[in-house]
Image (tube, rainbow, N blue to C red; front, side):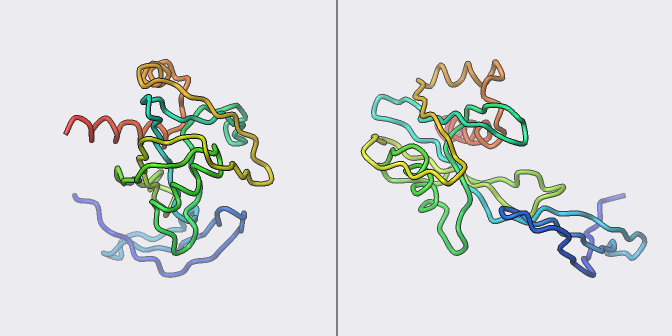
Length: 181
């Protein structure tokens, strides 16, 4: 038996949590055989940026993440504003979080971060030749440390589970695929 699409009959917002909303969906399978309530996190798309310096170093940030209750080493990123192009959002987030800018951005692709419970996409942006000549502008609750690592070290940190942020891992994988052709 093949999977069947479902039709959403009703949507109810049960919680608005600033960066996402929790939505209850009353849904029925297309053949009408099953129905149920499902919960979806609704959020704007987000973007993560693989920024490479002229020396081919990866620009990383270390920051505290409340979900994991731990410090996380990851590439810069954030929410795409409504109507904003993901490439523009990537450049904006890169400068806001790190003070780095420069180079023409290119899109490495996108993914659904968790299609089981989330509606949005994460866009992977590559920016080569970045330099620290911008001005960081953190959000109210952000505290970031900018960390530069050569690509071989970044690969090792991924293998050792020092870098565990899933969208960082996915973006670095997309870069490796793009470079392989």
